[in-house]
Length: 91
Image 1 (cartoon, rainbow, N blue to C red):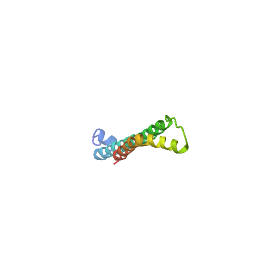
Image 2 (cartoon, rainbow, N blue to C red; image 1 turned 180 degrees about the vertical axis):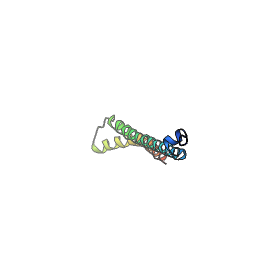
Image 3 (cartoon, helix red, strand yellow; image 1 turned 45 degrees about the vertical axis):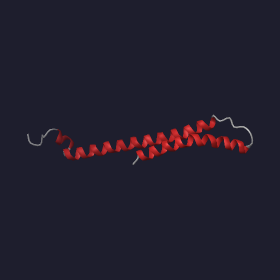
Image 4 (cartoon, one colour; image 1 turned 120 degrees about the horizontal axis):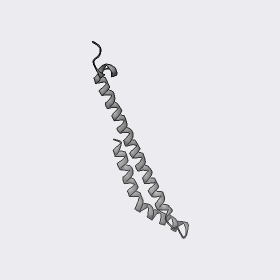
């Protein structure tokens, strides 16, 4: 019964199969990292928008702008950290 070498014949060269499985695993890992980065960036944007929407801006346009800048000064560093970590995760 030559030619019946088990699963090696069914799937081809075992080393080629192993290489392709490793490539597939790497692609999945890369896609997972990209999805995580996308989610982190979306969270940063959502967090910033939610914080600004909670501000009860009042006064002149200059005063309103200052109120929003104050919120941004608090929220923005956190958003930047999320985006930075997301970008580092892609490397």
